[in-house]
Length: 395
Image (cartoon, rainbow, N blue to C red; front, side, top):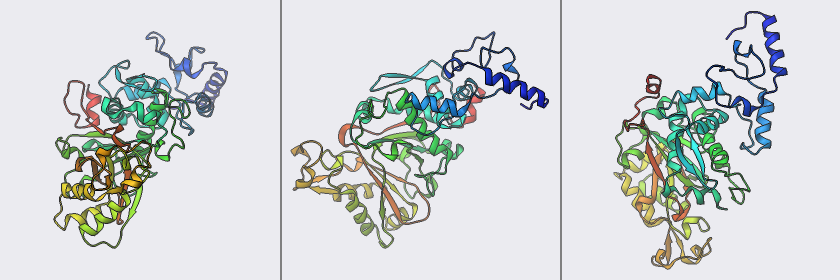
């Protein structure tokens, strides 16, 4: 809103400087008859002005409510915009998040999403990601509380990922994309502020991981020679989904020389066959993010997605003497011909295609048998699929 003149601008700035409201006051539920930003002035309704962002951000940091990076102040006006992109009520509980057993209400998730720098249109994706990590089989209790540097990775599929411009190509696991960076960060702030996964309190990761700041990307479905992840897991191509998986930070596999499927997959399986990872003594899921160039090399030899997963399952192994040096005593049931398979079956290999130009694949070891990936379709509360984010504004 434009101010009429400089005098009015000076008056408003003076009012804000003299305002004694705390951020808690500002976040209080509105009184319908006095719907104001703060209570100390009668004329603050003339124009919306943020509280001091630096002061607010530092206060949140001192109270251990951030990831250490400055936040966007979660004012009422900003939170309201996020609530326009959900058909749930503000106090509806999306999930209960351990270890604190915090109730992830729609409003709390919106507040943390504002803090993370998200756009309001990202709210449906974040909402369904929170629902996914609260699933029993994801086992957020262990993921949050372990000394292992396991992180929550989010994979988006379907038209909504394109609508919000989530990165699936060059640099999709790095900086530079608003949706990827802020949605991944919103997940982490929800885990800190709702679940109680504060480093050294509810999060006991020995060294932590850069993947705990933000870990989200979209699959490059148009560059994928095989069926994308959500179709593999039983959803229609036009259905938008969010998948959460507990994995370590990604590790690069550099192979610019292999010209056929088997040679290239041997390189990837050697990188996967690492002693000391959780998979080496408790086989479970792994994430393989294959570049379009690597995927093309393999698919042109006639290999389908299951062929790739089967090869990696059969060839990614650790000798038993190395596998038994892991975090827990090796169970004999995992030993096959003197080796420990990294995964329990081909189905444990979560294979997606993403990235830009270059013959690289990224692999991320998982959390063994302690966590299973969860996929959620993005739906309205009546169970109908959301085809476009803009459908929320019609509700």
